[in-house]
Length: 399
Image (cartoon, rainbow, N blue to C red):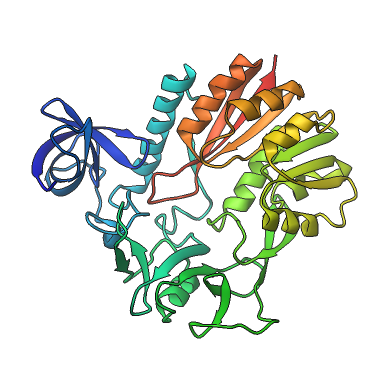
């Protein structure tokens, strides 16, 4: 369906769009701001559709928060991943806070009490050049490309302003095998790595030597303390250059004085390692084999730490023994009812929940309250500028 309609834009909604109405039907419109009047092209929908999707292509009445897009390639008809690039940086954080508040009111019946804080350096960089990890797909000519939003079509990249300069140069300065999945990683404590379909590359071609380097080193520093990590270049790590330190600081400040902690969805041990400082006993649980292997490597000299490779829910149901606090950093879908049932059965006094999805966090907040855990406080961090994503750290206490 291709139709141009005039819309008066309403409030932001989870997912990077705003809500408007056209002839009684809800329209989720991207590339607009609350309060604007726009012309929009309908990208999905039909006469019988419950709602439509649309892209604003002309602004008839602009918001004071509209700025020239920091990434035109992610604008209407472009790639995904920069859906708020037309929004002033402070207004992006206000947008995300509005989504958090609406999510908590709707799904948890609570007022979200926190704020959305900037990561160090982001205001100076205008919310750009923060990504130390970028993935793309090589098009038929070997150029780094991304998919058009909600499409299988590939669009070659002319720039990647969210990436650090060295990542952008490596991504755009080479040609790759057509169709290859490209990964560029600029770690904090070792050399940049480029992979194509998981294989290290040299000058854009696969480096199939048995000893081709693929490991990376990361260093995290918080309040004068530092921790070192090793992981595979294709393994999960926070993409924002400041995110590891921000999250470690936020979690350490909330766990409290307990002797034994469970770190669920532990990944490569980003939180496990600092949690073990001072001799605290930590049990880490991670289902991904690569992540669990990296976590074991990163805690090898910490005698009070154990790493369990396995599903979090099943591991909780099997029993972890008594813990004073639980840290959980679940996937975007959240922990969910059955996992929280198993967690609550162990009766830890405190939970520190790291969430990358406002709606999932709000739903899990409601479930935790039903299971005897009071929502104490929360703070959100803008670790994904120019996108709708936001990271939130929340504390729960057992009644």
